[in-house]
Image (cartoon, rainbow, N blue to C red; front, side):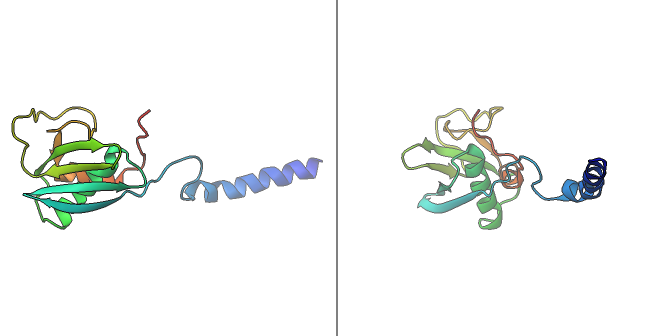
Length: 136
């Protein structure tokens, strides 16, 4: 019995550095945000979430698309043109503000308010998040 406990302690001591360096060790969520983006005309782009419909998925998709495909500067504002639709799981975005709505940015990440906006680089940075907001 004494040798078994010594062997267990020795094994744990030798394996601890390996376990500490392991990717995904313990409990964690490392999401892969995937979206489909299509132009609906007049500078408006529709983002459809694949997998998660968390707000960060939509912002990541449009931010990355705007910087990589449209070649906009990171400081360019991106606006919600049409808010999230649960049945179709899409959000429409534009680089110009929608007419007649409040475009004062809020303090939470949402896709449910027309006029909500953030910079392209802020939106793209959600692609590199380590934690997915499940809306809790």
